Length: 214
Image 1 (cartoon, one colour):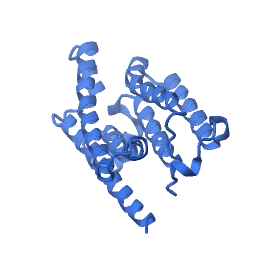
Image 2 (tube, rainbow, N blue to C red):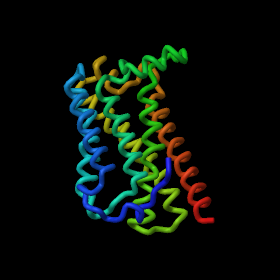
Image 3 (cartoon, helix red, strand yellow):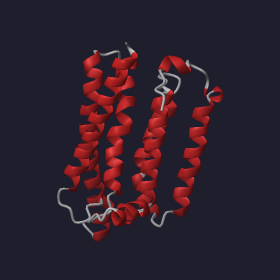
Image 4 (cartoon, rainbow, N blue to C red):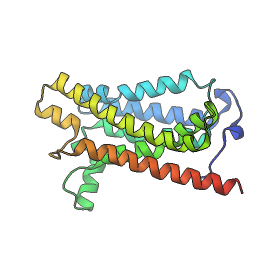
């Protein structure tokens, strides 16, 4: 995939951005489809509270800070990954079940894939905000996204635990919502995967920027 710059897309209005419009239509279509077909609508609403927050942020700041097409593509991919995960409880995710059988895994690892994707796919958009929005020192624009992914990953695990405790009262359904699947180190592994994805994304970004600056 070609890495596009923010300068390359200029500040065209939304209706003159066919890629952005295509992403919006495709995502909203899939989002509605996932809501209609989910076997657990309460779980879907709970999981998609963060999706809605991110969408509101993107819409509200569209004309204030314009991401590059590369960032919008990465955000689009992560949202699809997350929404597909919210369509089912993570232990029952069909793609995760297929991976479990094919690679002889002891659990459904789709939730781990989402956490890896969080760091891998969203670190570069964070880097753009820091580098071009806040214009902070170059080295910090690579390090801070990793710190943010670690912090947000830990905050998400705390929020997830609070929701499970509040709404499911320690029941088996609460355990399914958390996606632990019997692994007592599930939260730590999820955070570690987000961290690993972020480090990889920032290393790739740094190397690509070094290559382009030659």
